[in-house]
Image (cartoon, rainbow over all chains, first blue to last red; front, side, top):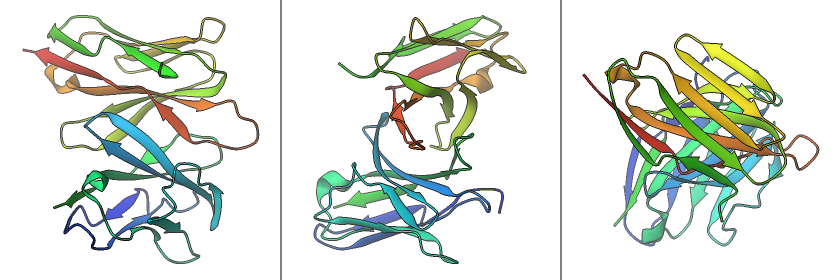
Length: 112
Length: 112
């Protein structure tokens, strides 16, 4: 497709529950990124993939966060045992090598 | 100190005014992006720059690599330009690491 498709748009989880977010990058884009936006304007890099391989995971809180991009499946970002501080908008983005980056609409996670 | 600093944080203008948003960065970069985030949350890439100047419609973006500074200009501003404008950089970390480091954004409000 010609847009980055993220699901779900909104997700509410009780503290300690699991949350799983999905992202279908634009066809032909080999790079996928996950970013977390908290407090409206603070973006934090989480992880990037080159095709199905993890490229950079320096931003991932590894104890509870995991992500995958498997062939012929949407990419996913999973949070085990969510905490209140995980409440944020999670953006997925994709690009061809080093070119313009395209963002999805974001998934709004609220942990209560 | 943030690696990417934007100014101003907030900007209010009257319709028709010429607008400038500034971005300074303190690290070596391979590219700089200007992004637009509307109140609904979606993020659109406006420009990707590594040198010089780019123009698209009423938007102009410039970058001075030696001074580590970029500007986004909007000519003949319109209320529909109201949004958060975000400067983001790809650090020059070698190889093909295209993850972005974001500024805190500039909230632009254009009044009719």
